[in-house]
Amino acid sequence: MDLEKERASMVEHQLRRRGIGDSRVLAAMGEVPREAFVPEAEKRYAYVDGALPLSHGQTISQPLMVAMSVEALRLQGDETVLEIGAGSGYQAAILSKLAKKVYAIEIIPDLVANARRVLDSLGIDNVEIICADGRKGWPEGAPYDGIVVAAAAEEVPPALVEQLKEGGRLVVPVGGRWGQALQASRKRHGKLETEELCRCVFVPLVHGS
Image (cartoon, rainbow, N blue to C red; front, side, top):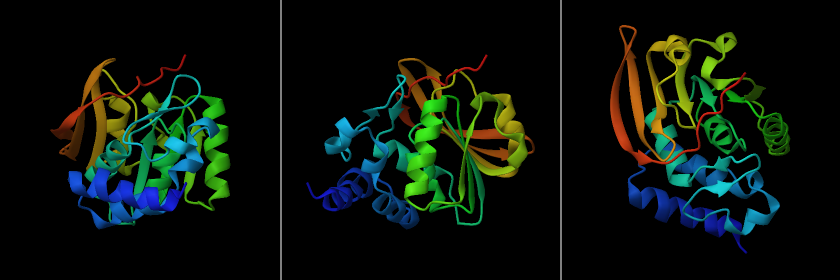
């Protein structure tokens, strides 16, 4: 298997031809090896057009969903970004190429350990993976230029709105277990102005105790 060729094909056919136009996002998706973040048994499927299973009932999102989410943040390179639901660490790795600093929250300790290991192996040093309840955000790094949530929420957690900078962008799938709307919002005068990007299906945001 030529995974580099498959990655290039993924960028062209799954992303560019389906509307992803940000050249920085496309370059990041073409650079980060998705196969490093999937379980050994799934590596041959690393560039399929869909989500893949992780442990603990979690998933690594479809490449198109990752690209659409990070593109909607409209990053220029000097921002501080918060990711909720880090999972495998793949989206955090993409964000590492697009922002100055990334805080990535994951509530499942095994996934935190694995994500840290993979990011370290790739030499990515501007991502901090934190084991915590994502619904509470991460006040220590706030305020954030962008926040992206990689798990479904019934409603946008208020802490995330509070920790978002004025003018910052928030991307989150909102809805029930079997279907959500991927929403992109901008914070103006303390409130969110929201548009729907597409329908989607994400695993639910895991609640802490």
